[in-house]
Length: 242
Ligand code: BV8
Image (cartoon, rainbow, N blue to C red; front, top):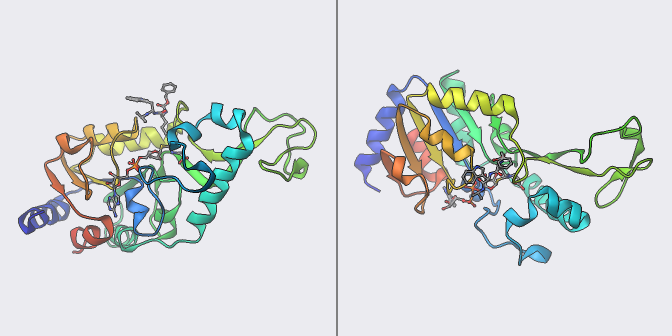
């Protein structure tokens, strides 16, 4: 990664009217959140996240999958935003309306760093919702504790408010992200392997420049004008400083 590349990207950031930042699990790695690529631990060691993060897996083994989310939730609640998250929030405060944060992360760290208008395409692990369409009995009062909690009257299960594989993304957030990407001058693709769609497709939707920030090769390097082989907490503060 040449200093000339970093300098070029800093110029693009300075000159861009509308920037989209697309982030993945690598954005939170330096906060201590394992990425999807990182080996699973505990009971879930032999399972790929793609196998667990599905409605079928939850219906087949509700306790096993619920406890996986519960463990991740605790992990995500006890970490702090890193220098990368903070640099993004600070840039947004200095330059309101110029940078849109689109994240695949369910950890809420961008929001906790103070970023405004974060488009969380894959939901929020800290929230729950009903698995099946709620009936009249499916009220907060009727929630019976358990792994997972359920409706005491009809047994409807609670599930994490995240987007599982095979599920549609929140339409409003996706449309807003697609509009931001197609209207952008610059897309910064940070900490994502670029393999999960439709999120990864946003990097291909811009008529502007694309910059990838990642210590490893990604599935989006082919559309990048520059690939910066480094970490988000190290590089974003430099790229976003005025
Ligand atoms: C859907 C929430 C319509 C849950 C997640 C087109 C082509 C191929 C497949 C598809 C396609 N369209 C749809 C699909 C199917 C599927 C898909 O994309 N499958 C993939 C696996 C091939 N997509 C879907 O199912 C989506 N829904 O399309 O609905 C539909 C409906 C029915 C039938 C068909 C279509 C829903 C996708 C969302 C799933 N939910 N998360 C949860 O968290 O439990 S996805 C989840 O995995 C994350 O949110 C994230 O999106 C993804 C993980 O990817 P990354 O974030 O990139 O993380 P990863 O670990 O892979 O990589 C980390 C990177 O960071 C690495 O590159 C590493 O080098 C780097 N790194 C590490 N440290 C650092 C760093 N970078 C910088 N700094 C560091 N310090």
